[in-house]
Length: 485
Image (cartoon, rainbow, N blue to C red; front, side):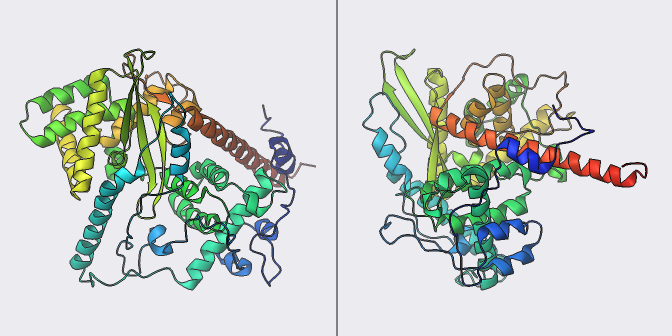
């Protein structure tokens, strides 16, 4: 353990943690100015001083000509979800369900006993419905604020584009310097680069993450790799972090006790409405799988008869993630073969409801109705509680339940992101997980290995930042002590 009175020097700490200072043997976007990414990284990051971007703007190298299967750089305004000048949501584009992740799915179809993966082509009507829903909300917003509904969205100006390019080059150079010293630019696997970025995400606030994500998109499109679309999908698979300080967020319960869940379902049984039936299905399916509300429309089930399985069948739940408008899609797999037949049927019904709503361009509206009914029922059943249950409470309780059964990498593989709670109390007497968990999904080993790598990087960053903070504190105390040598 590190002695807080004698903290390690950051330079020595970097060497011990493997953060080597070797310069990458590549020129990423070296232009006529003569500056290199390594030189730019020494000057600081865009987080510290965004004005540094002006000094490091160079021409971003184009992908190789022979890599014709690459995703072309889309309209950056729409792809990055950058608000237009009038504040309206960005314009959306037509959806083509084909993407690089299908290459992996097709390769694994030849392996007996293994999951085949989702058929992205079958998701075309659902994705089209989600896109049309976004377009309709965009028109409604413009009509509400007297904007021209048919006017194209204002794209990012040249200065903003240059800022993204500089940020992307700097991040990619930092990745090569820390994780792959000496690697050539064209040899970087964009998925490894994104995995490294997602390990940093818990240390950045939402605004910093959006800027870095925009820069990473520009940098990834310059890498000649068949995994560009999959890497971009990973960037958008990380869940949005809601504000923890807003008055409404402070009321949301972060967990759901089993007796409260049963009380909610009992109260809903007395209601004769389609919304109540939909909420009952959502409660059971959500607590067993932990899917985010927005992930249900593109979820898919695969069932295969297998005499060696406990119930004579194997079932996989595919959770498609990414950016629908940008056509950047990937998926994670949860094996739910050990679920009871009723639990599997509940998940199937939830997927069917979500797909129907999305195809009719009404998923957001139906989700809002279900969420309101859950809030109203919670107030009725627990009127003395200061916390209210919402649809996200199901996912958070699922994560707590899985933490009692799996390690951090397995939980992250099930949830699709690192489930790091740095503010957790280590000496709390209150049990957060349920004592009896009937339905337990199995994570994909491919995703477990991926999350183990991401977790290793996260722990290195955490240790480095803690020791740097202790070092600075020690230097300040030494400067304030007149008797210090």
